[in-house]
Image (cartoon, rainbow, N blue to C red; front, top):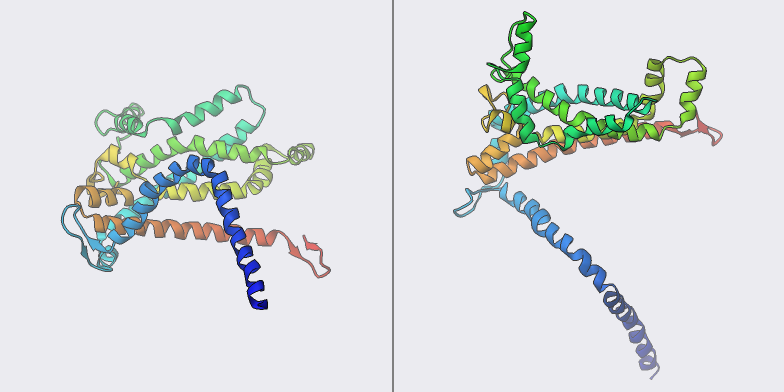
Length: 324
């Protein structure tokens, strides 16, 4: 009898959380229904394609017939594919030619916009406009500006008695042209990010430097750059991911073949050709995941740099105080 009496309240107590959960579900059901469309769309158009692409990378499929499971054969071929490694090399060269000048110009522009100049609002909007302009339209414009035959750049070089450059038919000319397009598009975007970081720096530091008679360049290198280091690393990461994902500029400017000698063939453009021109969806998925691994490696490297820098900022001394 004692055992039965004790078991009844125990079952009742166990049922209480279930009742509370059902009441909570009914209470917040309208809120759950309100946010459900986002998660449904994300599941259909986000999570499912990602999972399906993983499976596709282990198959041989042209999009119409039966899928043939081939294991790691796509990745084995990827390692020996000279066209893929040529695309990797092109991507990194364009990234190097565009990222370093772009971030330097963005930092200088942000520093100037942060100073006391007139029409700062106008300049902020003007520098950000290229980022929201249609890249397809601007690629066509750049194709005319850098044209080998009648481009404005070659016309200016001829007027200066300089030899013309085959911008769209030579290997380095193609890479430089694409890099200039990337610089033009994203310099203002990164400048706005740097400007937000500059506004978070205490003005007392600049005031003290000016009182000590420090010149503008000294203030820029000794105060602005060190204080903006986390922001700079963030822009390096985002610019790296964006540079590795370069597609629109070379595709519109040069076509699907990447120009002469495939000098403008990037990783994403090569993936597009394999998946949607050659209809080799298995190999295209393998290229996509190889790109993901490369981008992840760069993100991890930058993350470790930030962590090591942060761990060096404050170290407890022997007396328990922070070491300076």
